[in-house]
Image (cartoon, rainbow, N blue to C red; front, side):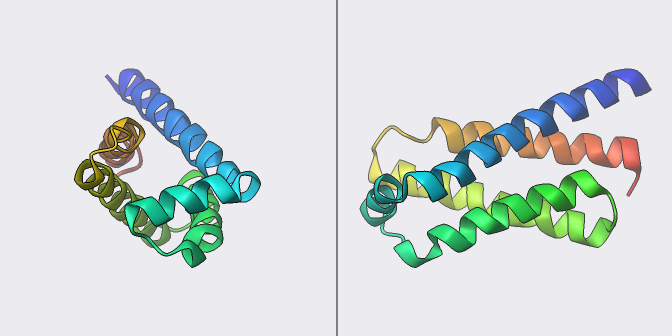
Length: 120
């Protein structure tokens, strides 16, 4: 059971990390495209770079296991980011909600199995 929990945790956390790194890299390399999407969804564009940095720092907090409190804040920050993204895409009816929904599921699975492996 323990081995299965670890496999599920590492797969979910790895996939989540890949999505976040891809997202953050797009924020830095394709600013005009991301800026257009943010404007379309009604979000301010000045948060693009800080959000990219926050995503990277959140991943560092999750992977480092140095501070449980910091790790919980990272999970919470990602949760709010994904819920807001999912809601914005659903309200805009642009059909682009799949990645936000996938990220939210991966985040929840990662968080649940983080508790099982590393304790509360």
